[in-house]
Image 1 (tube, rainbow, N blue to C red):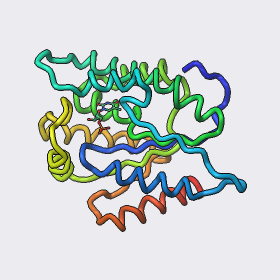
Image 2: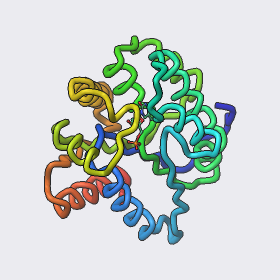
Image 3: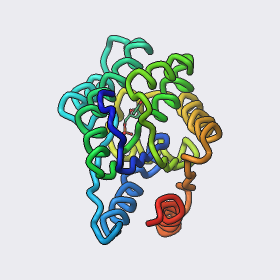
Image 4: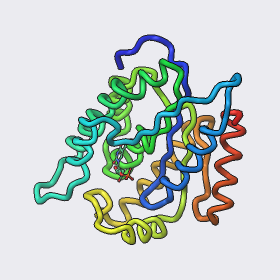
Length: 218
Ligand code: TMP
């Protein structure tokens, strides 16, 4: 990360396995932040996602998610994820936070620990090294982890249509990813807030609003 100046905005990420309802929850969070004022001023909100968030990083996303006959090695997958992230941080996230905007990202590095670390079995210390190399000290201020049984999410994901390269993985892969997210949350309980995504929409929305009030004073 090139920006050496202190970051002023808030960095919020939303995580979870496939089909847990990230988009719906992100819409709740967006609405709540956009209706809030801090010191009498509206908050500038930058909505983004990973892998992606810039033209170049979205191209890397396509490479990562397009099914193909050539098997992608797990190291290639890991490096592509961090290549996209480096671009995303430098072009979008760091400048936004530096000018005081809030950034709401659909996934970030916890997904790398969960999918590449726990799912693919890559040594966590290697991910940690890349995290420091690419991000410096940049970490989310708040991460909402949406949790639901894997079969529920996979059923929702397949109902949406054609599956991407990662969605085509077997259920046991996503069980490991879910366990990976739980392990990440145990490691950093202060940063994470768990949302029970099996509840009805109204209850899920209430959970999200409570978290935003408790953690960010919204
Ligand atoms: P989604 O954001 O539409 O759920 O799709 C992104 C996919 O990319 C999802 O299967 C999770 C995966 N992914 C990783 O494997 N590692 C990462 O670091 C990130 C950000 C996403």
